[in-house]
Length: 389
Ligand SMILES: O=C(O)CCC(=O)C(=O)O
Ligand SMILES: [Fe+2]
Image (cartoon, rainbow, N blue to C red; front, side, top):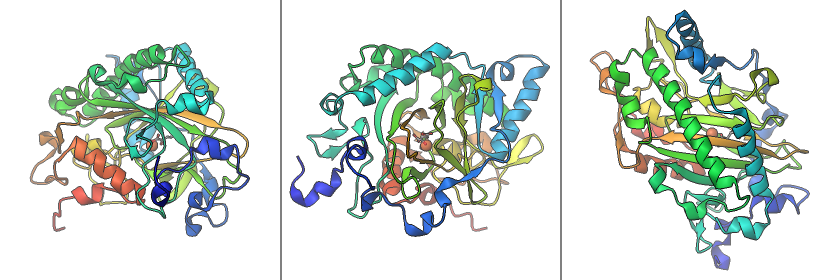
């Protein structure tokens, strides 16, 4: 156990806290300027969430071009979209969500067996718990999570994979395999939008089973004061691409666009079991994408931001809480091989568009992200090359 003087490093699991407190403790309150009025409520999106059919996108007929243009406009406008016709069985998605809910309903001792704190103290990425707490005044998020590396398969820490419910492991394995095909299809379509020969090496680096894939089960207990706390603070995901399986009924995700926060509704029944894909892009120039002058973004699906030399950018997003209902979501993060360096793809670097980011080893990047995240900062700034313009 942590000694008295550093007990702030190991806050309660939010699920336990939510069961006992009537008001969120001060450590969870977002800075006052960010919660004045109803700032955390967010605005309704002025249009439906962009939706792209993966089957049509990958077909070899005229429909594919039409779908690609929808993808392009989704990436340019919001930086995320719902993918339908993705081939992941609806029953599998339901089963994974149900197993996730069941896991979080298990008694504390059962869940603690998979803790992300080594010896009750030292934080590691994988396992059940919260984010690392680096400073005493760090503002905490109203959520718990189970974070597991699912690929490459031979690097799974199976001792951290829940044994209850019993079907959990098998379902997660099956879901991982199904999502892999969706990710490969989406990456291929994005590489095509960039006119990259041989996919610019994107598939080589991230396709099949080569990169590191993490699956994060998020659990947001009901919160007595959704106007004062966040489920997850503003951030962008540290990876190439995220496939997000959202709660069917409870909203919570919000996306930042032009300085305003918009509520992303749960997928409408008409879209069945759509997955949300996070990755963004700036401005178009003929059949390629041209760089926008830097607008503040977060750490994007940052490997992709670096590799695409700033062309693709991930949306900054956050999650709000709900006073009556708990919420679960399941994010599959696709990152580069942790031992590999990520850098702008050679085909996207030329005199007109010199490299904008330094190369960095993926493992160092992930570590730096968590360092900055705890301070509500972003790490991409530190990787920018000063082009003197
Ligand atoms: O719960 C959600 O909808 C989003 C979760 C998220 O942003 C994350 O896990 O990085
Ligand atoms: Fe996220």
